[in-house]
Image 1: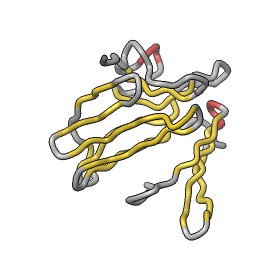
Image 2: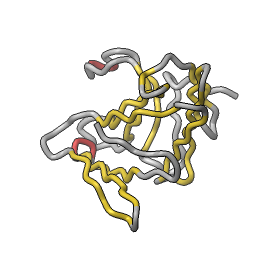
Image 3: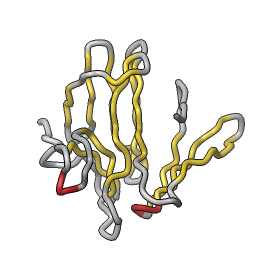
Image 4: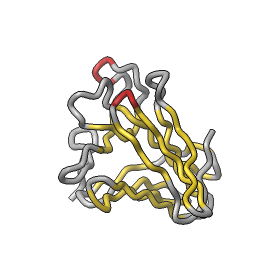
Length: 149
């Protein structure tokens, strides 16, 4: 069973996070067409949290979306990125293929939106504080690397 992410967002029970595909200027938002992580929190000033785009060797690539109730796969010739919920607060993102990656473009909102490094043992995690939608996101990698640009 496939989901149409333009019609049905990918989420899990109890989560305020959802992944959906939106056309350009969705509901007058001014957003570009694409795949987005968003919040479904009712009092958020904007539902859009971050744009999601797969990368091949560090560059955006053309991909197709295969969305199932349990996972979303972004596929292209050289790789695959999979998004799946571990629980209502944890969205796992994994990549397969040489040079495969993903860009999370945290959208600017207010002066108080920021991403800060957090030391966790020998690793550096990143806390994305999004006041525009009253949410915080902890970003860390179990393999590969995270780079901020």
